[in-house]
Image 1 (tube, each protein chain N blue to C red):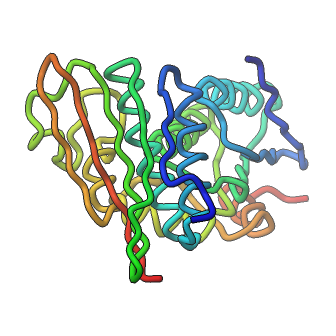
Image 2: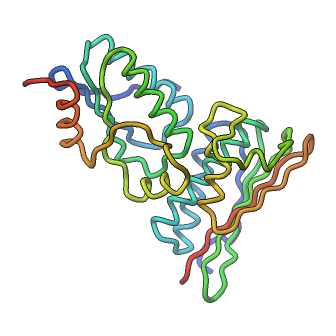
Image 3: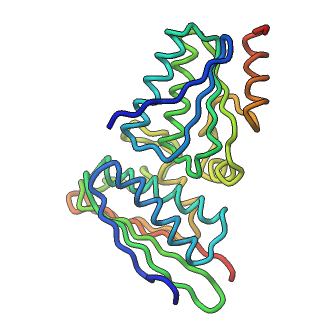
Length: 122
Length: 136
């Protein structure tokens, strides 16, 4: 089952979104595509919007953490934005340190955060 | 009652994890649980269904409405005929993982539930019963 990750470019920054419940297969595609795009487009950072996700289990949390680590390894920064309030509460209830990435409330703050992290000028 | 009071789901591949948690959420929603309860339930069910696929390969899930006049009670039973768990106490430890997870799965599910029971016998299988409760 192929699946194309939508990635928008804003200067040296990329924006992507997780829009629906991904299957495990799609999650792996997501991870691979993100790291590849960051690398080939020579991006300085990427914002991942997860406001459409109504469930983030420990597997999904790990996928996001691992993606962030891989993106950092190729030399870019990652910010995750739009964690739903109930998802946040559930993640906290489930355990400490499940989510080990920079987060912001919304996309706009996510971009601002990335700019801070990368000192990009537009 | 305006909805089915029992729903069964077969877990046989990774895509069933998503359908299992979706039907669990829908079931809870129909019963009248709020968004916070729906979310913690769907998350716990997702963890448990993933364990089944990862360790046993296949299994099944069953959801039941056991509500009383005063309380909403939803029970989910997830079972498999997989290898079982040698040491349940160890599996319930924070940070312990035998696979490639974060080790937050089982203890996390317990914290997300209002009632949680796990039984397992090596070579026979594993059965987890969890419930979420809410006042009407």
